[in-house]
Picture (tube, rainbow, N blue to C red):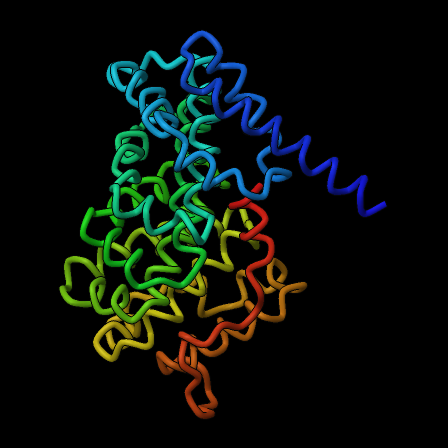
Length: 305
């Protein structure tokens, strides 16, 4: 049985190697992209293979920049979007792997995705493109790494996430909010966002608008990440003081009690948030927002799916 498993592994490796080689052949790239994106979970060492194979990353970047002219005016087709999203799925694989993550970051490859996050068209091809691009950034922040946070902050990722949080689909909003949450959970990220009133109120205004929208169309998954962002903001004394006046009323009353009925972790976060800003009647010992509560398994599956 062990011998059969080894043989199967060798066959998988051979298949992966062949498909990676086909990525650098323009005529074969589209099919190779499709096959690799479908099978990427089964190829454990695909990320190093993609990174170190001659011309492969350049080929993936070529796919990305080829649709820049379709972004404005918005002429992106479903076929072109699907093809680029397959390339992005492979880049997400590289961003997720511990051996290639830093190399991926040092090469500033995430910058190639920023034009996609700056689009405003709500058509399905654009929405799929934004969501898949956010998945790559989400893969970077999923592992706690201050170098990643510093890079993202220095390249102005926050305004791009806020844009998606305002106008994206529920799923895109969820991933974008998750990225902001992970940035806030890093001390560098929290300090950056709370360094100026302009940055703080830009984030809190978008979070507030999202809460107002969720009061009409609830989503427990999205609400969880919004509350987590607010709780972490309350760790900063100046931000906490500001939240006493700008925290949405919907989070102070029972608007979301049914939405959070099955989520004890998020209910605890909300209770602690209200205590921190002085709304709750009881004042137990403050719990730092940086301490994780309920697991993020659903979001992790979302970002790696």
